[in-house]
Each structure stands twice: as structure tokens, then as C-alpha cells.
Amino acid sequence: MSFEVDVARRLGDAQVALRLRSPGGLTALFGPSGVGKSSVLNMVAGLLRPDRGRIVVEGEVLFDRAAGIDLPPERRRAGYVFQDGRLFPHKRVKDNLLYGWRLADPANRWMSLEHAVDFLGIGHLLGRWPRTLSGGEAQRVAIGRALLSGPRFLLMDEPLSSLDAARREEIMGVIERIRDHLKRPILYVSHDRAEVERLASTIVDLGSGS
Amino acid sequence: MTAEEWSIILLSLKVSLLAVLLTLPVAFALAWLLARGRFPGKLLLDAVVHLPLVLPPVVTGWLLLIAFGTNGPAGRLLADWFGLSFMFRWTGAALAAAIMALPLMVRAMRLSIESVDQRLEGAARTLGAGPARTFLSITLPLAIPGVLAGAVLGFARSIGEFGATITFVSNIPGETRTIPIAIYGALQIPGNEAEVTRLAIIAVLLSLGALLVSELLTLRMGPGKGGHVL
Image 1: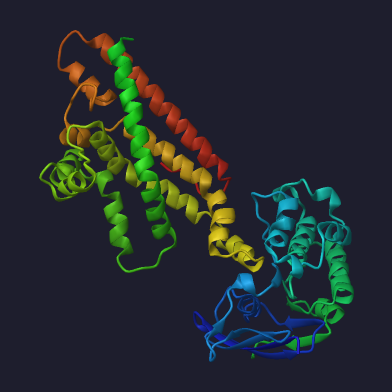
Image 2: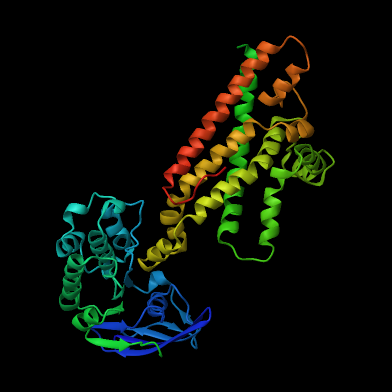
């Protein structure tokens, strides 16, 4: 199993709970906004601590409340692509891309800067500041930054939601190529059925009731 | 400008510089606690930090005298252990200026720390940065314009410090006679208008320059972030 997630966490008045087993490929968490899809990704990334449960990715236990295991985010090797890009505003594109790459154990790196730049078509952006990028450009850089950190798996939180139709198509193509060529398991969050049906190999419907 | 006036200006600069250097780490730690910390008594700490802003300066000076005077608990400790004395010394003037500048510096730094998007820190963590590296590579660089703005503001406040200083370390030429104290002293004797005018102009220029630098640094935090310190 690529993803084995069984977590619960109280957030204010709401209770976020999810049980999921997925064989790999692109696993989509699908459901309306407000059901805690992003919270699940944050728990897998280690940015939010579940009240109880267990998270295993590719055989490695990231969190196990009962066993007292809680790896800090920097040791989980998650390539997290956020909804809003979240590029570092004080670093140029190249330094954003290399931020995680420089921190990664050389043995864990599986992509070079040249490869990522080629793969995403962002060679002309390397010297730019994040605030000068369009939404689509910023999202490609954010994906590149995540890939370059040598992740064992990817987390994508609505990576298309802030883009117009043409850019959505373009980034969707990038995600398909990551899914098909890079072979890293992806946990993907979206509220868009068409998007999920096109991209996902496994769909977890969170509905409003679950 | 006479040699004496130059020495007054240099002393003011020296006192203010030491005051800012003394306060910088303390103010940053306090700003961090107030911006990010969750602990009981936070409101009280916030109030205590701001106390020098509203307390009559002469009361602050008197409290310093009690604490750091020759027979004060802190004063005796520092004298015994390090041979340090603040009484009637320029270091005492710097201590008084530091206490008076603290609230302004904490305010500016707190604003700049609060304006750092914590989600960026989360992103850095997922990319492999531990807490210390995240602080050094993300939080601090993003907060640094506000931290510097606070330091410059504290410097300006120190240049103008009068009440606590004269109460704590008196008016001693070459040791504690800073610009405001010299102006006050000169005003006590008729016929010193020219000296007063020259020192006052210097004070205005120094303060205005510091405020401009501080505001420019605050603008560097970007529109919609941070905001004005005053």
C-alpha cells in the first residue's frame, strides 16, 4: 500500500476523520470544501497533529499515536504543492526551486535542476521574483520546488483552483506526466469532479457526511 | 560648533548606540514571545513591556536608581561580580535610554514578526528545513526590515531620552550630559541661545533622519504587511 491513513482530529466544532488505503498512483480526496480535505494533507505532511490514528506511506510509519511515533515534517519527505503556491517571496525562482534540493540528502535526490526546469518549462523564469509570476508560472515553480526536494510522495492541495481555464489545462498536463513518468504516489485534494475523474487512479469521496 | 558641543553630540550617539545594542536581543525575544507565544500572563508581560511608555520618566529613573544604585540589589550584584557600575556613568545613561526605548522596539519587531506568513514556514518544513533553519532562512529574513526599523526607532528615542537619564545618572559633563540634558542645562543660564539653537537643530535632524529611515524600512515590508510603527 502506498498510503495507509487512519486519522481523526477535532478542529473547532468540526471533526475531521478519514480512513484510507490506496495502492499508489494518484489518489484523489474528493469532496466539497469545508470537510477537512486540506487538514488531512497537513496531517500527512506533519503540519497538523492528529488526535489519534496512524499514517503510513510506502511502508514507512510517519505517525502512530499508539506507538508514540510522530516524525517532524522535515523528515517525512513529502513534496507538498499548496493551493496558493506558497513560494518564498524573498528568494528568486531559482533559489525557491533549490531550497529543498540543497537540504536533501544527495542519495535522496532523484531530479536535477536542469531536469526539473526542462520538465516544467520554466527555464526563462529562474531569475525572476515570485511576485512577478503569473498564477500558472508560480504553480509550475511550486511543483518544481516540491519535486526537487527528493520526495518519496507528493501531496497536492487544489493545485488548479486559482488558475484560469487555459492554465488549468497546462498544469493538469504536468500532473499527468508526473503521475505517469515519475511514478511517485500522489495524494491529491480537489472539489472538482471532472478534474478528479481525469487525473485519479483511486478516488476517495469524502462527501459531506463522512 | 564648539569642541564641547561636538563631544556632547558624540556622547549622545555613543549612549544611544549602546542602548540599542543592549536592547536589540531582549526586544526581539520579547517581541517573539508576544507575537508567537501562548502562555498565561502574556497580557501582563505586554503591559509591563509598555510601562516605560506611559510611566513618568522620572519614576523610571528613580526605579533604576533603586535597582542599579550602589546599594540597589542589581547594582551591588553587577559591582561584585563584574565590577560594573552604572551610577553617574555613561553606561547608566545607556541603560536608562535602553529601558525607555524598549517598548517602541518591541512594538515594531512584534508587528514585523506577526506579518510573516506562518504558512511559508510550514512550506519550508515540508521541504526539509528544521525549526532553526526555517527561522534563519524564512522567518528572520522576512521580519528583518521591521526589526531594523525598530532598532532605528529605538535609536531615535534614545537620542531624545531625558527624564529617566537625569534622574538616574544626573548631568555630568563628558559622562552623562547628552544633547537633551545639555540643552536643558544651557537654558538655565541666560545668554546661551546660540548653543541651544545649534544643539536643537542637531536633535531635530538626528530624530527626523532616524524616523525617515525607520519608515522606509517599514515600507520594505510591503503593502498590506506590517504597517506603520507609530
